Length: 265
Image (cartoon, rainbow, N blue to C red):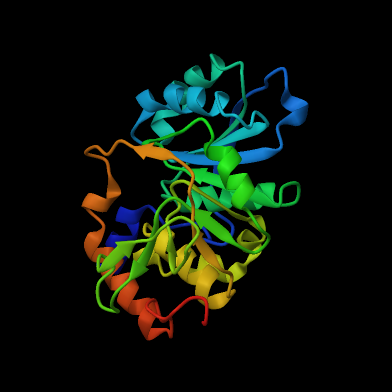
């Protein structure tokens, strides 16, 4: 049964620290490619129709020096995504096609490749549209060895992930969602980050917050950047609630205190 479960997650036959078999795809270069210094990374899966709008919203940012990295978790749609990229001319784009669906961990693999040239990386989800000053705001908030994200919460208990309240911009927090955030890329050199238990692999956002806050003791903050989310039937929050609860309690048993004042702890 365990083997069948792992096959269902498509996580067999490759080492998590190394990542799944993947292949660089089409690249697009804008006229301003020499200035493309801030990497923005997004994972794509079942929303190919949204990619063009994502590209347009990033090309329209007030901070124009952006390089978009796309991790494609849907091998069967690689030609569809590449066709969209082929029409882009206002932003630098690189795409990697993964033979396995590794969920949001794909962002971590992509960011690890970037960290030797970039000290920070921005993550967004494929169902989000950043406001025109989104990247500029995140850059203004960034500090070394920190996280700053638009999904920021204070937990009220230690039993349920959903027992939380939204934080205000600038507040120190214990949870920073990966959709709409900026962080120090050095965390992606941490071998321990890629040792998330297989059964929790697809709730990488909570695992990342735990690792930054508890293992590295890096501060996490609620961002004031503006970004909108358009949820649909593919929203993983609809199916992963129970798994997030189980991971939440697992992390508490490992010694993480999600309720403690993060300024003190």
